[in-house]
Image (cartoon, rainbow, N blue to C red; front, side, top):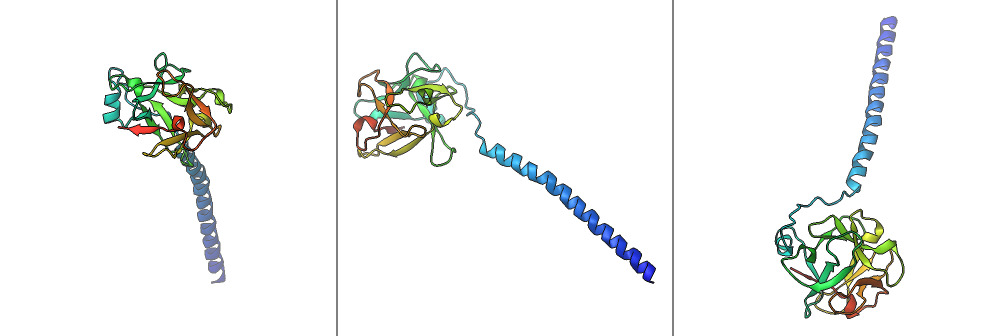
Length: 206
């Protein structure tokens, strides 16, 4: 009886060990899988949006959620790219046109801490502070959407009424301003944020 009991206890012990080994192996597999899943969800891929080069901003505005970001409602000026949608182009003010697809931008989110990016319609280009500069006067340009800190911004209340937005660089802490006021061709550059400055106030228009 005692021998049978001893064999049974050894079998039970072996069973417990086997279960423990299987559980350990499963945990070893599940931990890297969980880490991989977390890494894949935390990484943000470049936006995949339809290429419809024949369509103007009206199409992107109405169908894909792109918007005009106007400097001033009365003058109908908005952001657009000098020399077309090319990497490194300065971003300037031009009159709003529904037929030109470089006239509107898509707001990209999901970067944490309320930071956003601005992707130019029908392109893989985003608003970017040139050279990741912290200097006053550095241009806002267009650059491939890779989402470094100098392509991320905060939208703050501008203090100018009518829901104007101040757009602040997440990398430099400076705000988007205009080198030549509301005049056509005025280049977007970063300057010290001044609450209530009309040239740092932006309006989102459908």
